[in-house]
Image (cartoon, rainbow, N blue to C red; front, side):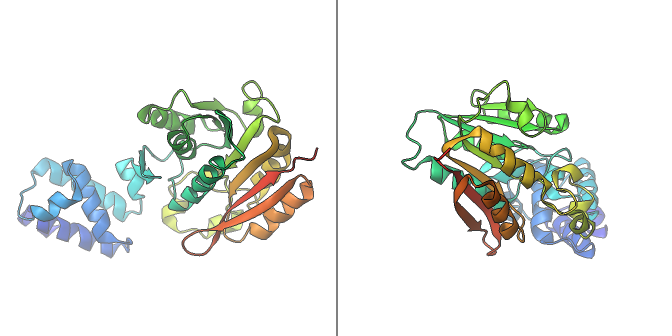
Length: 300
């Protein structure tokens, strides 16, 4: 506190903030302190280090202190700034939606790679996403696949409000269609069965037991419904895998993000349907199995 009150330079203010965050065992306290001060001052982080002796006015000091104490209380940085980066795009986020993770970019990249293959030479792709949250997956696909029509749903109207703000922010309203409803029921009036090229989802996959042991920053802040997938974390996969068969056209793909220990079980679920082939597992940068894709058989 003394650093902020006695010398209101950028240098001393950051010094106080870093010490405060370290005291609360916040990971990467320097980056958090920089990001929040740049947010308050409406500048980039580089300016902070080229103007270390700059004086911060009392109003901004008070704003900054409140944000630092909030972060020290383990409120996620993205919820404080209401901004998260995904696929090199900025998204609006708050407590109504899950914070987009870098690992989910693997799912988007998998779809992009498949969509650019010889299997998809048609001018228009139809993509369905189950559970849009902030809209980060659907919007990213729309930005990189200009010829795609993307239908995405959420059971949470609050989440759809955030997604709608992101659709407007990225000017993809002609390509991304937000629908309210649960699983595939939301799509009946908008998409024909066996006409979909990709079904994608990052469903809740944390088990009830795992949720109890999550770190407080995640457990106490992010929406429970967006995290927990039933007792064993697999209830959404069972339903999506079973019902997707009726919606995918032959030769189309189901692409899912998965928990790091779930791959073998989900492969069994896919094989039990007897209509999925070319099952592929993709790992994240930590070597954890993160995305699974499967192609619907051409044999009906």
